[in-house]
Length: 468
Image (cartoon, rainbow, N blue to C red; front, side, top):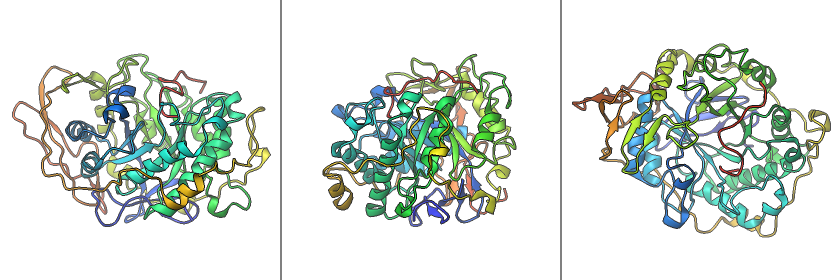
């Protein structure tokens, strides 16, 4: 059984810098300590939509020197998880995955992309659900299943942004979740959670959560049920509060969740510069009992002005003031306490039974009869998806790179990944990561296992620009 009352291993036990995690009810749990794990994440899509270019063998995790540069910067910030949207399963990602692993960072990966035939069509999902599409999503699994820091896969991102899409798309998204989980069961040596990243559109958010987390009567091992549920939310803007932002409403909505809930994106950019005061609520008593952290949108600056770092064409980086603002907010958090909260039996709850009564919004699908596998798909689930590169962790001997780094104040910085000991994750404040002039750095001890330590919002991108 994948994720239900049983614990599900998310980390490998043989080659690992990051510690093994499990999913226990509605929490990520450190397997060795029994403590809840909070995602301190960063959206990472270096190059934006143009950074995924299969015709030229390029995606966000294909260039080791770029990954060394960005892992070093995110390590200094305190990031323990990256979310990567658009990936090519036919490229080798061993170097980048191994770099982020030794930097103490997990990876949450979208299996879709915005290119034709590589995502579920929100308006006509039946047209995009076919064996060729599934072949690619299965190939993503093959490519990343061997990395111990692969935390989870998203089977869909903002596929449902209005009630009309909610009337047709949910059964297809749930079917893709089912198919991915069956593929993982047959071809991976550990269970890797599969879930959904939702738009924070209140007309459809609660129904989406209920539709994907409920258990279908008679379904073996709940194979179509989401293992995790996340949302892209931009309702906390500027010097807001837990109540003014509507975060309190989200906590009230999700307090009975049977699966982990976290922000797959957050970080409103109006007004600018950002102050990131939501960090204190996300990683404090306001939210930690219900939410498991979140992913800041985003690392690299794009036209939508959500970036923390401006990356030039020559690979040099200028950190923006938002980078320092976020870092300062992270430094206010007592991470030893945050990551040491013991998971309790209250972390586990049985999923609701799928029923029409779960769905509140008229027009949202209350049909839990899922599409059957398209022709040829069962052969892929049984025999494997041809062509994918099967990833594995490799030794990294050299963490150097040649790109110039400039701080927000104009100072020249030297950054280097500090490889962590096994069973460690990255933590804000444990590594200065950057220094001016001399290049001296503080070694990062990481977070060692056993250490004591509102309304509808305008999203920065629409479905179709990113992986659905």
